[in-house]
Image (cartoon, rainbow, N blue to C red; front, side):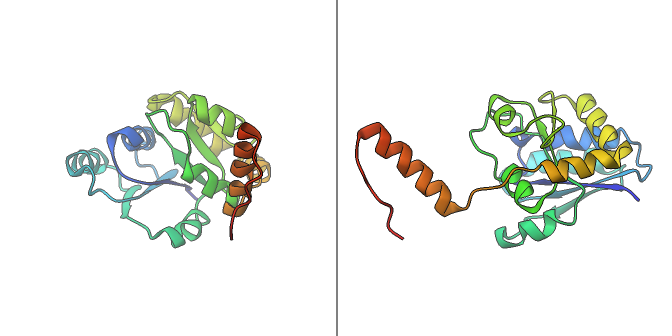
Length: 185
């Protein structure tokens, strides 16, 4: 049975989807790994065209298009791991948090933010940003070690609700300005 991977979000060069495509292509289409790319290609049609051309020789890479936000947890729950190959320095990753929320392991580009969010080998796997060879090695490790997949599922941290995040941010604000503002609900 193939290892089922997914990438979520806008299909643009800064999201690094080409790194995931290249990493999966290195499995030579032998059916060991599948990659589903979920996301709109409207923001960068020329990039999406190049990606499709790069993946054309590998039937295990499919472009599934945009997914309504309410269906993301359902789509993620069908996967063995979510890959977040971002090339840019992001301050938040919806894909990582959503994967954690449904208990799906993550394989994520190493950035200052993701190193605070993902504990390598405990809550997910980190790879060198932009390095398809390193991503390929991490995917191979995940494929060859089902017990690691189980450990990463169990290691996924709890995800705060929006209300909990609002309370946290308001608490930080109140502490910073010496106020006692209460969020309205």
